Length: 263
Image (cartoon, rainbow, N blue to C red; front, side, top):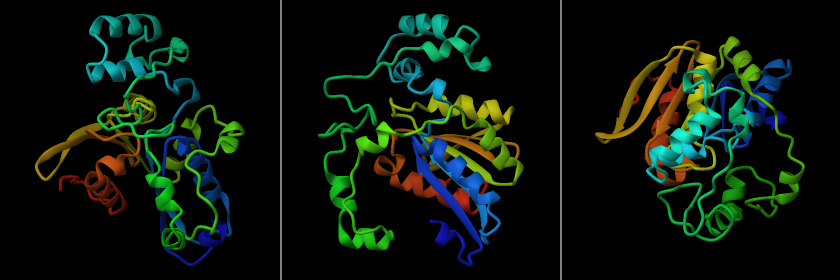
């Protein structure tokens, strides 16, 4: 990667999912500080990303209430206990004690509207077969090694950062655009996490809706200093697998600095 970054190119954008919501801000910060990197980091885009470790898996009850999977009485009880200061004040310290609530039986926690196939993430073996195709590995400049969907050894030793806020603020100070996009059907990393995190950094933003083929596709909030948060209606944890056209639209508009997200 560092060899690639030191080639003579004009701009680069970095984009990731979930746990790399911590890794990419760290990596982007290192890119900015490395004097040997000749290209300009223009922006980073993070999908259903982890933001604060204290918030990891804590907003599952509100997400399930949004989808009608739990009632308002249960939501009210949860809010009184774990979000006593209100969402406008980021729930307070009690939010870190909120219980996880995984959906069982045939539910796909990564995409509530999607079918659960085999495997821990309900993806089956399609992604494993795809990324182990020699042509795909060559086009993505991968080493010729077996690609594993969930590497338990890596996960076991994975060092979570406590909070990406300081890094994201620093990136914005250095004129790096930051986009957080969240599929609304993800019970693993709910969109509520991204909503609160970006508002915590950005303050007051300008909210708008965007459409693809005249169908409502998400709500976009633009904050000062090029911080953007958007939902993708009906998308799961990996937005691109369930809403590829909307995902392409988001990245294209973000990279090209297009204000009108309608397509």
